[in-house]
Amino acid sequence: MTSTPSFLVIGESVADIVRTPGQPDVPHPGGSPANVAYGLARLGHRAALLTQLGPDRVGGLIAAHLRSAGVELLTDGQQGVRTPTAIVLLDPDGRADYTFDIHWSLRPVEPPAAVDHVHLGSIAAVLAPGAAAARALAERLRPSASVSYDPNIRAALLGSPAEVRPEVERCVALADVVKASDEDIAWLHPDRSEQQVAEHWLGLGPALVLITRGASGSAAYTRHATAAAPAAPATVVDTVGAGDSFMAAVLDLLAARGLLGAAARPGLAALGAAELAALLRSAGRAAAVTVSRAGANPPDRAELSRA
Image (cartoon, rainbow, N blue to C red):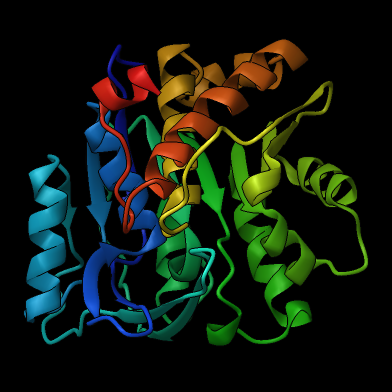
């Protein structure tokens, strides 16, 4: 593995149209995988995003946003695609509810060279017809790269939990690191506790499962250790992109400790409780910066060091 890992993120880019009562609509670049790629680039990493963007105004907005941080944009070469959008309704506490207009039709592509870590995310990992190509690419790269996955469930676009669980578990089984929210867990497994789900997922293959709990903090599970951390203090403007900032910060911290890449799997599996707690606290600080300002706007290296 190189000293500066190369990241490939696979998944959707979405124009988040933030709608607050009594105020004009505000478009923000978004989409969970795109936010992770942007967060990694903001932290100084080489990040490429395989995604779909249309030749429309919001597509140009997203592309310029991602490139401004240094993200390399990759496509499958399709013409005539439409940039996905989401209407984001904010409640008085800044919590977001989404209404989506998304078509995901990724075709098989040749993988880029020298990828150390693959992040697979959200809608693109389970929404047909493009999900199969996204998962296949992650599987093809897995012998030489570590893999992370965030289900980031968007129930309005999916079937029932019973229909979606097998798709999610295919991705979990591909991954070394899985990050999910407590809301994801509750939707996928309403009859199981967070710990039961984490243990089930660990049995499918990942070395590390992370659960974010919003204002209640976060938890980490491996086969040998568990840890929890409170949420970092923050004045919440909105929660858009908080989990994606958490994910990017986790990958940044694992990279700094040499725990990404296929060869690092034994070290990742051996993380102890104290190391897990430190990981959660640091990633929580990144999320706190993000919720303190509008949109999915993660911290750069200097901001994270001050948080």
